[in-house]
Amino acid sequence: MQRRLLLSAAVAAPVALTGCASQSLDGYASEKPVLDLAQYFNGKIDAYGIFQDRSGQIVKRFTVVMDCSWKGNEGVLDEAFTYSDGTTQRRIWRLTKHADGRYTGTADDVVGPANGQTRGNAFRWNYTLALPVDGKVYHVDLDDWMYLIDDRVMLNRATMSKFGVRLGEITLSFTKRAP
Image (cartoon, rainbow, N blue to C red; front, side):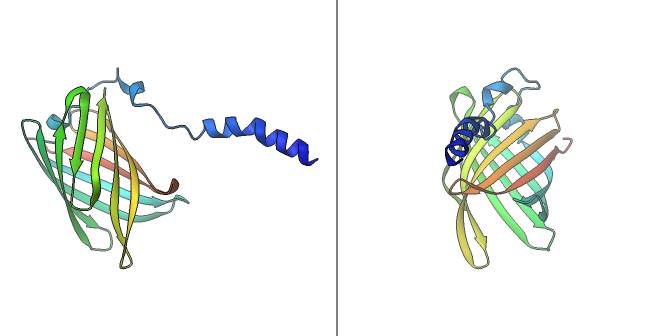
């Protein structure tokens, strides 16, 4: 009986692990409209978001007002967060555009550089965030995906994890203000 269980587990493992595989950025290469971060993140942008814990429960709602600008290959994204509990936060991203749609970025609460790349209408961004919780600071990893819908709207979905364990998801809708 134990041998049969081990054999079943060995056969099922590759199928189960296939479900854990992440999406490929290359799969978006032909998608339109093509995302140019310097073009989209330029001017004022409003964002509306939620954080869901690993059970799917929404534990935090928030809005973000972004003031974005670029000079050559250097961009600044000044984000002002307002959370549903009335607290506020500010994050200022400093981005650098490199060849082949690659980007790096820094912010005061980001540990080390953030790295990202665009393909077609998508942008994948990976970084470690220093997250304050109940008087302690935890370093959590974010796998952040953005999808340009049209010239004004972009959707964002990020998975937050620690030591490879999924803690929750962040979902955002960005709307670029008319000039």
